[in-house]
Image (tube, rainbow, N blue to C red):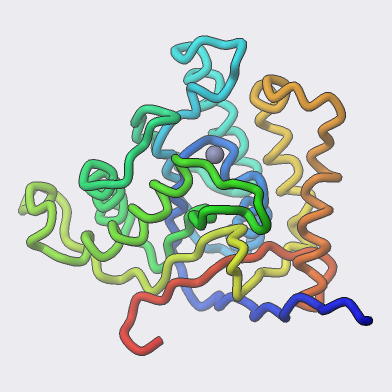
Length: 250
Ligand SMILES: [Zn+2]
């Protein structure tokens, strides 16, 4: 009996200029997506990060007010390593995000502010594949992001954000890409930017220490994932994305 090979992945398009990455927590992008961001910023593309929470409930031994400061600083440094100089923190409550209008409104405002061609979020499927459960904030954020890009395009949704002294509606988002989805269809070659991705994960040192995973090695961890995905793209290292096109009939 031969083992069934996972299906090949398509390369992601790179004919865009501006990207907004919306994730629930500091560190969410660094578990895979950041190496792809490093590739894109090296191409001259503009990438902005938006953290819905500051991950303040993520370190068991550190109370939230202090954890927020530490984690925001780690995220800013982590972003800098991959060529991102703008990180917005929406400061909604970590751990108890709910999919709904509040979240959609906050993300739609970010989309209207930054006017991206592509929006990236984290995997928001129920699992990471198999029975490895996803986390509630990731699922809420991803679903809300998918809706918020369409809200941002409609002048009659969250109209209080618009006006002569405010923002304009933005209908230029071509697709939402969810990093690390078990339903991924596409991937990006991160062979040349792999090391930057590792460095960006290492920048979350207080968080990684707080996890208490004694033998956790960011390079080894990321390499395990990126080699598997790379095989499906025909390169050494790659990051996988599920693509949600926003036009009709795509
Ligand atoms: Zn997270």
